[in-house]
Amino acid sequence: MADRKKFNVSLVTPEGPAFEGEAELIIVPGAAGEIGVLARHAPLIATLKAGSTRVYLNYDAEDVREYATGPGFFQMQLDRAIALVDDAVLANEIDDARAREQLETAQRELELVERGESTADRWQLEQRIRHAENQLSVAGRD
Image 1 (cartoon, rainbow, N blue to C red):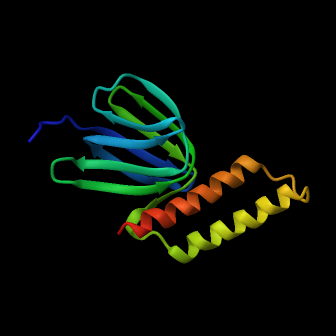
Image 2: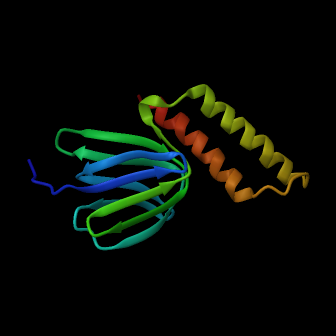
């Protein structure tokens, strides 16, 4: 058993915190690949894409909280990690019907953009599609 130092972690959405507490490790979906940080990690700022965010409360005991998260930003500084994301859904609380509805809505909007019938932001729609697909993927692992 390793003796891992804990640090403060906040996973925050526009609706408020999805997780706040101490953890041994957090792994976030960075735009260029997964980023894992432990206590005393060097200061870091990164862009996040939709994906799986895992907060390890106790690594050895496999006590982990997994979230399907949308795009956002991540900062690590002075033993405090903050992930600001547009959505965070705890893996065991994912609503398949809601995720499928979000996926279908975003796909319809993207089709309108591709036909020139909408000026919606293509990147945002693609991220919404990826986030809904991610929720369905995370839910399927349970």
